[in-house]
Length: 102
Image 1: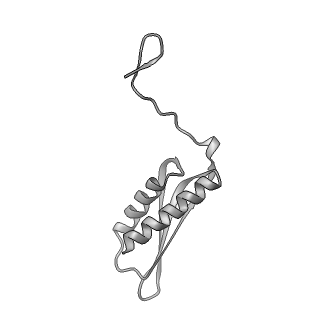
Image 2: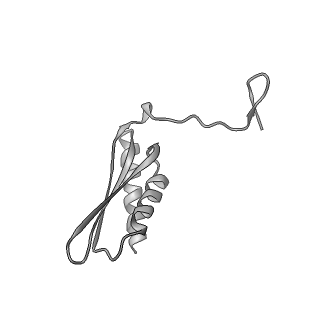
Image 3: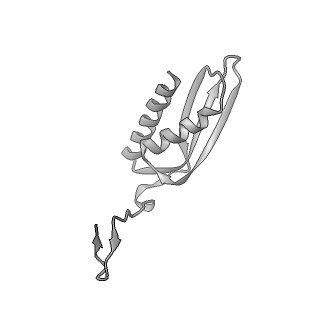
């Protein structure tokens, strides 16, 4: 049940990042325990992202070490514009002419 809530939160955060054309460099998970105390955990991303799967993996990792939880809140931080944060994917090996081959 909690993992489903984290998946929903990751989906919402990813969609909001893409809609606003932003990326995040940090994911934060705030939990509230049954006795009403709070814990905040943050994970710095390897590279700026706006992908739901990256946010989801970070939230799952942060949650894995925690005990019984009453409520979960997630957010992203260290935002930047998507145009300024991108990675060029490379497929195949370059040939002598510089063109990529399979």
